[in-house]
Length: 265
Length: 296
Image (cartoon, rainbow over all chains, first blue to last red; front, side, top):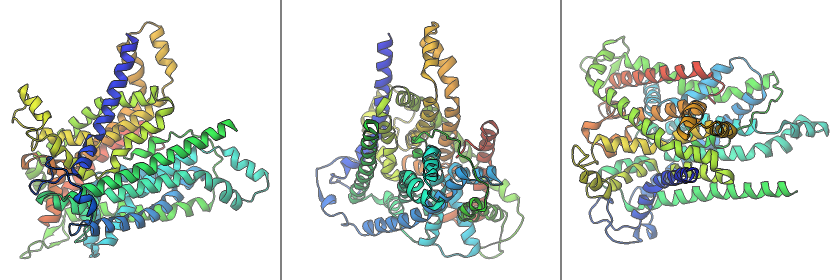
């Protein structure tokens, strides 16, 4: 009975994982499709046209590049601001801690449509021109919290004895930070940056409210959905997915090896 | 909302916290950004929601105190409001049922595969949200196996799934599932497996053990996951737009079209403000139980 139950759980767990990947499989498979009409929805014939001519449809690649630019700028700024907050939360005592916690949590718990519309209300009232910069400002705003949470988790997991040891060995605070703390927290910061970039790159709702006439990759997809999404979009999305997965799995392997090496040492 | 956050469980280590100016300097730029571009916009949103039209000029509004904007907006759009909460509620329940076995499996039986399994849970978010949602048009298409299966059992009121509320709920459930799995995982991972063993040693059946031990101990994760799934689902309009018909529109659709297409800023702002108010009530109820330290 117990045997059956344990395997039932495993089967259900695997089925749920498979379910998570079904739509991605559909996206990837359809990137090799030659659609019969304008809508790339059902399988027609095999073709690698989209992959060999990734920029073949006007607007696809320019919107893709726009999203990458926005993602890079927003990620760099948000990662810096968020990391600083995380350090303050873990290492310093200050007044207004619960207000701070709330101000960091709320952007993660606010529906995007509310954040997008309220920020647009601000820009409209200030007569601030909509475009790349308003989107970047918006992205930094909603990414900061995710950076804080990710870096904070890493900082809290640090063994304080490592920094104590550095101090005992006469390292001044700056050297301790530079040679001990920062390298230990770096993976957390890198993870936060990766998360931030993927959130920015994939954001549609907040961007759409604040973009004006600017077209990011998700906004391009949204517009194309009405008249048929070009196969190139599927190919690019599949490519992004594969690259992100490789980065994350690669870092997992590196982590695993490092841990094993430490264990055996 | 995000997934990766819970991926690395933190072992809190007590570090001597210093009180110095440095702390405030570190907080200042980030919190200022959030204050200007997150908190203050709510004030402008509220002010916009009270604006009145400039007489004779379409699409122009001036400062005012038109509380009737709220009454009018709610009178016209309460069905979309109600629908949003119903769809989001059903999707959240479904997500809980689907997520629990996987979260439990990863936490209790994952062993050294745990990090990899968690990566697999968040990996789908690396593919475009819009395209993943759009892919459900293919999966749930009228000639597809899923629709045929349910039609054979005569379970579908409209003989189809696509362009009905069922497709919207299915899309919402799928899209926000990781937000349910990860908090559940974080809570279940903290459960001491010996408690479950003890329960079965004392001759509790599997279902009694679940009811009396596992479920109560995973409640923090259930509450957090429910909140993190329900909130984005209630505000979402991508699923309703791509998978539903005009009869399945949610409050997000209304806010978006009123703001961007009709330029009826006061109505859209009023709706957005009400949505936020409802969600704030939920968040604060949660905080009163859990405190703010657990939030971030």
